[in-house]
Image (cartoon, rainbow, N blue to C red; front, side, top):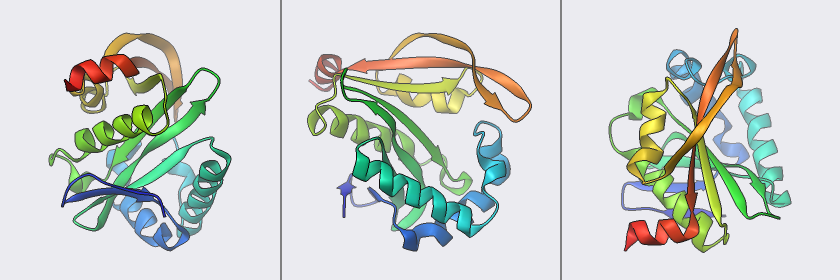
Length: 183
């Protein structure tokens, strides 16, 4: 089973069918918090929906179309991070993430995003990694900014969020820039 141990407190690992209850419970407990910026909450109504998501993520991993990992903080599922998609021709990956409300403020997402960025450049040999976040979502935008990603622009009406469009800020990091950031 694929796993990235970040430190004694934090591990990223592939979700499996046995995680469906924990994933649904975390989603359900954080529903109002997550709904502000994530468009899929209304389609996640039961544990079965989380199971279907995990099944899709497992298939994406097999097909090399994506990499969806559970974020485990003190062995508890705290959120999800991963490459939502890959463009293997151009060696580009797009990272997405979310964290349960109870886990905010512990530096979890910054460490997880740094680890998956490192993995993307060193193990997957990507040349470019992107992170996109709604313009007004300052907490999500703080992650790539803390990690030294470059704000490259804005996508107008880049995502439909329940009853309106939101503009997205796009951040990019190149492999050589990541190496410079770390040296």
